[in-house]
Amino acid sequence: MKAAATATLALAALTAVALLAPQWLVFMTLLVLAKGVVVLGLLVLMRTGLVSFGQGLYFSIGAYAAALLSHHFRIADAAVMLAAGAVGAGLTAALLGLLLARYREIFFAMLSLAVSMILYGLLVKSSALGSTDGFNLHARSFFGIALAAGTERRVFLIAGAVCALVAALLVHRLFGGHWGRLATAVRDNELRVSYLGASPYRVVYVNYLIAGTLAGLGGALVALAVGHVDPETAYWTTSGEFVFIAILGGTQSIAAPFMAAAIFEALRTVASQYAPNVWQMSLGLGMLVIIMFLPAGLWSLARRRSTA
Amino acid sequence: MSAVLTAQALQKNFGAVTAAADVSLSFDADTVVGLIGANGAGKTTFLNMVTGYLKPDSGRILFDGRDIVGLNPRQIARLGISRSFQIPQLFQTLSVRDNLLIAESIAAAPNPAAATEAVLAQFDLGAYAEQQAGLLPEGIRKLLDVAMALSSRSRLLLLDEPTSGVSADEKFTIMSIVMAAAEAAGVTVIFVEHDMDIVARFAGRVVAFYDGGIIGDGPPDAVLRMAEVRRYVIGEDAHAAA
Image (cartoon, rainbow over all chains, first blue to last red; front, top):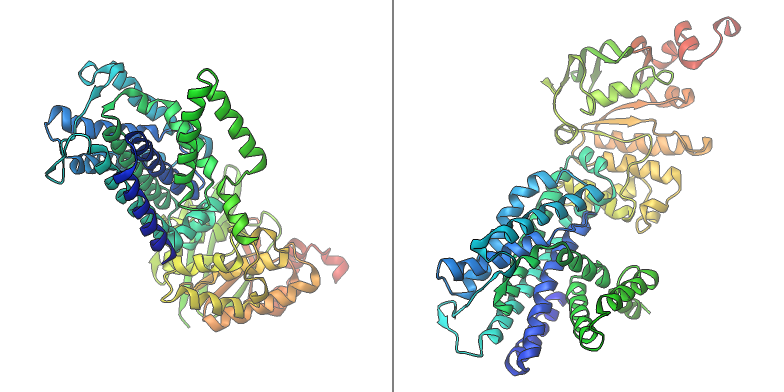
């Protein structure tokens, strides 16, 4: 119930931002939500002890699926685009998961990275998809209602907020019960899980599917926000950014990815404005400080305060 | 009494080493059987074949009349054969209660939370319920390991050295708790054990392994007195003992 109340409050606040804030803040908030959703998926995987360095794959598939609808099929409804992004990524994860769910630790991380780089290579070589430049997309309606010029992002933000909060609540619910304990059990001791009569493979597979679908949803949201897609979405630095945000926030709460994504975007904006040549270095230093002093992520600060 | 588990002519070789040579055994319901033998005699290989970790080269294993050779450990666990481990296999970062809750949930207990509380009480683990499994003393870890195996689904419980690594004065306490719980649950117990005092005290029947075969099978006092068992299993010099 506490989670539902928090979500309602968050929705109210985000709706206020969508209606009242200046365009740049609406855009930033939309990016934060989109990345938060992707990182939420990473958290789901991390519960089973796995880190994917290839979530860019699903992020990219989500973005391109949304953009292709607009560009090649003349479907310009944002709701359909979001659904297509999530479903397209989810189906790919359902297929690739059959293979990847067998691997653990560094092998899983590297294999997921490799697959995402294959997509990057294909996109770069594909002139029909604009190769390295990518292409633009336009969403002109939302659930059939035409969007007035200038209001698109405000509508997308409300849609994104609803998607993100529903996803967060579902994950919270799923992981608050047996499934969450089972995922931790797989992380701790797969042998025991098998001998108790459950399949570790199945747990990893389902969590991989959830993570892929959420990354696809995030990708579609970003595509809508930016109005453009390019192969950079599948590049390993994009995947690395998601892992960065996950570590920044920590894995203790479903709110942590969103908070960490907000801090990350704010840091990046400030750093690239005031120190354009060393902004990556400032992020790197920030990460170093987090790992050394707050290994459980920034969220542990909030927890420490509430228990003190 | 009807047999719960029947092994027929099990054969298992690892290269030139014979781990099971024509092993045929039958276990009746509601009995407690101790498996003894020196290291490498084939006790754990037998447990591993019954739980599906190893596949015998030939032979059949019938559980309730059904051949379970070729099934994997997960499928066999779902049929009701559960096992504990020589080195406790726990979920280290979770509490004792969560460890049991996972076991009961996987076993599809009608009410996992209630079943967990019952197990905590039965195994005298209530005081440790909130402690992290990875930080428990060895005796408690062994107890928790058995408690997880003995979920609401198990009908045959296999214990691989339930008292190894535990101090001598704790051994009897642990075995008493385990056996009382197994009896209350109405499960058949097969346990591997090196401590002959434990075997004599808790087993209703003893099977002695040597070199992949069986050299003794019967009531504890009879088997533990056999000359071959004394020489190859207990390690006494037969002449000196005579």
